[in-house]
Amino acid sequence: MAENLLTVENLSKSFGEKQLFDGISFGVNKGQKVALVARNGAGKTTLLNVIAKRILPDSGEISFRNDIHYIYLEQNPYLDTELSVLDVIFTSDNPTMVAVREYEEAMYWATKKDNEANQQRLIDAMSEVDRLSAWDYDSKAKEILSKLGITNLEQKVSTLSGGEKKKVALSKVLIEGCDLLILDEPTNHLDVAMIEWLEEFLKRSSLTLLVVTHDRYFINNVCTDVYEIDRGEVFKYKGDYNYFLENKELRETIFRQEVEKAKNLYKKELDWMRRMPQARTTKSKARIDAFYGLKEKTEVRFEQKAADLTIRSQRMGKKILEISNISKKFDDKVILDDFTYVFKSGDKIGIIGSNGVGKSTFLNIITEKIKADSGKISIGQTIKYGYYTQSGLEEKEDMRVIDIIKEVAESIKLNDKTELSASLFLTYFGFGTELQYNFYSNLSGGERRRLYLLKVLISNPNFLILDEPTNDLDIYNLGVLENFLKEYQGCLLIVSHDRSFMDNLVDHIFVFEGEGKIRDYHSNYSDYLETKLEEDKVKTQETRESNLKEKAKQKIAEAAVVKDEPKRKLSYNEQKEFEKIEKDLPLLEKEKEEISSKLSSGEFEAEALVSLSLRYQEIDLELEEKELRWIELSEFL
Image (tube, rainbow, N blue to C red):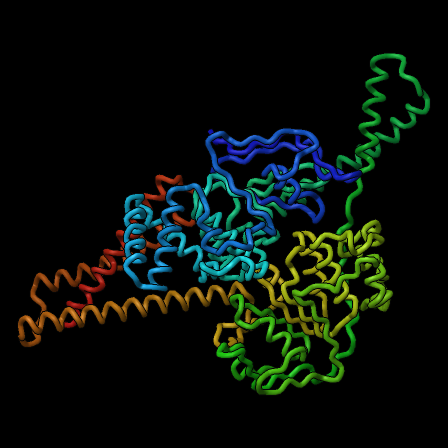
């Protein structure tokens, strides 16, 4: 029987006249990894805050199993700006965390100032970590910090950017560990490599997860269930994002049929009500009550599926954008190194790379916001840029949403020679009439960024540059934007950590590899990742073989010093040993791959996972020993 860690019963919450959810109930069982999805404004973050007891519900109950420890990481976590990164990450009553924190601090000061007092402090700290058997904990902490790009533990929180603060907070909760982890948009501010590491970490972990995310690949790779908030209710789907999409469509089709039946029945009941306005019997009264329930069901409004929009882009001449041998560096850090590319009509290119390698700098250079150190940028006379940056829209507190858009254009021309008004354009992207006449100052952060994106799109550029456009978009608006960009006929250049978004739109990638190197890869992101994983595997194997050969040579050289004898042939027993090793190696490699697959499947309990992990380590060690012996024996063949 499944162990229930979290129970939500008859929960309701509204703000003013807006009802977010009404009487919803659901549970999260041990081992489940649940994605919570809904449209912007439907109450996802509010629900998490209610569950975490940050805000009170209007009604209903939330209960956690008594013996569990849960952690909630919000979108914009609060961190004490006076503390160092080390203080934030290892501030806890957990004795193991206290010991590891003291060890990290002692290590820092011992390397900073080598004196007797600091050395003694380090020895004492190491003894305490040893007493608590916390060395695994320390290595786990260092792995997490390294993978999330946190290297300076003495840095003050006050000097960190918003994205860096989010990474520090995420590191803290992953290092601390818990039974139930509640996350709100954890992949924002992470680059693709970090997201993939986080997916693998969460997938292999035995912890239970409740996460709000718009990252569809993250849901497919990590989550076992999808819970959807729709019209104030929660609908549960046992499966990944693809399963959710299929079954959501089926559910909505059935619901539409029910509403249609209700409308037909309502016409008959309405006629009866007009003929019998007063209930004279218990049966009549029950029928009248049922009538009002029926009436409420007929008033359900379905959102129309947004039709594809094909915008009539401004004419583009033969010359678009030519980049010739551009280079750029800041101090000693090389951002671009002699990069050349000539854009062609219809290019849809994605840009990927770790944070800080120069993606945004590159965009600012080609739009001439900053200058390259050398090289040439040549822009065609007919080119009109539309540039969506991470900095956001200039604040216009006293303006209405519709007026901000109309500042740019009253309408946008479509390919069928019709025009779409600014109001309908806003509606297409989820800004209903009420929101259009709201003031900018009343918009949420996500709504402001979405409005900024629409302001760029309605300017009708023929060269569109989008720097992380998917942050703060819900899954539904993400789909609308994708459909719009698929039909877009100009050039498109996108920086995004959303791999699904990139796969669906681009067929050409600039990979920023660091030190100014840009790899021009002619395929989508998934193909690139597959190629890169294969290359990394080959490189790792080559490095391993190289190290083994060095060890073997060293061993042979040492043996030769002890006994200088002429090169000999293998003995009968050595020949048999060599042949056996050749048979054993592929079998061990196969078993290693099978165990790796099992560890990633999420189908095993903690005890089985520990057993598999230990066997994986044994095989790794055995492989190294056998490969070393194989090389040693092969020297005599």
